[in-house]
Amino acid sequence: MSADLSPGDATRCARAAAPVASVSRPLVPSLDLSVVYEIAGLDQIDGLNTGRLSGFSYARDGHPNAVQLAAKMCAIERAEAGLVCASGMAAIASTLLTLVSQGAHVIISEGLYGKSTTLVSRELIRFGVTHDSFDPARPETLEKLITSRTRLVLVETISNPLLRVSDLEAIARVTRGAGVPLMVDHTFAPLLCRPIELGATFVMHSVTKLIGGHSDLTLGVVVGPREAIERIRSVASTFGQTGNPFESWLALRGLATLSLRSDRASATALDLAARLEAHAQVTRVVYPGLPSHPDHNLARRLLTNGFGAMVSFDVGGREQADHLIRSLRHIPFASSLGDVQTTLSHPCSTSHRGQDPEMLQRLGITPGLIRLSVGLEDPEDLWSDLRLALEAR
Image (cartoon, rainbow, N blue to C red; front, top):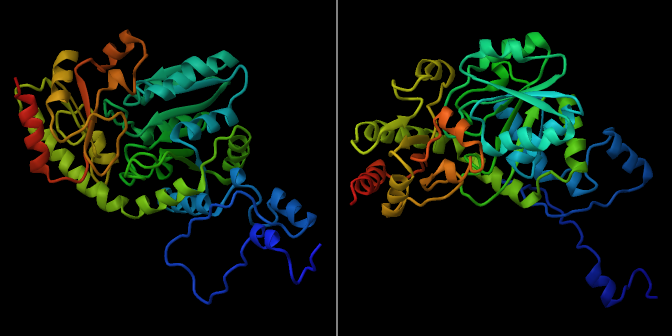
């Protein structure tokens, strides 16, 4: 064996490069791809595992890029602690898996995102967890549903795809009075309001969408009370639901321009919604910024930084929706949302595919409904594409 001061070439190749000494530090966050971390000894690993010492040992349990992203989200949402998860659904699932057990009860808002509804109504029910749903615009209907077994109430600030606005303050008064945590899916409304200041216990985002902003990452985040988040962190690690370094780093880049993108997209969305509402080929337009929206007054009170980047509108039926999609030249049909590029989706075929048809019809998620995710293009260019497609024969 070679002397330690003169190792062989194989050893030189295998050993990690020495840290670079510097009196300066990076202006932007560095990407830290290491999965494992060198630890000085057993006292140190014990300290890391108990939280007595700060640092990292294994990336599934935490890494610098996730810590940076969680810290920024906590600052934005005014939360004590946060956890980056592998997706928005992973954030919801980790929270539910932490709070519920066999015999528990969960309450969700009507019209909740399809996969969230499926998680509660088809998956958790297999483990003995029951649920009820309520109209989030009528919080007085919530109180009678809460039982001694209720472990969580889950609502969206702005629902997908009907853009109903939840009365978060009134809902929070009910949940606080009953001692039940309230989780708000804030994916459609980052920066538009602060649910924790309105009484929510947890706030989650699908970072994949507006926060990431470029359709190049899949992440989620949940923020809330420190003790509860640490419990969720343990469950998320056990179930393999935590986020990775590269996508956390990408999300930090997206977050830097979120405010600018949100302002621009909200202004364009309001403009397009008004034009769509006046078009003869459109039977219904749903946008919280329009006076015709059923929750317009609530939206004006709750949302302080615009009405969001999503516009939903109905063209009459599935055939008409397909014709519109095929006639558009520049707005692509894509099942996600929140990109700098405007996209559209057909909820019955994507986000709410496989849901009970009678429930969808009752809620207004019809075969002719289109959800438009407004990006950063010139409004006139977007309207030209939409108008020509609506009038195409």
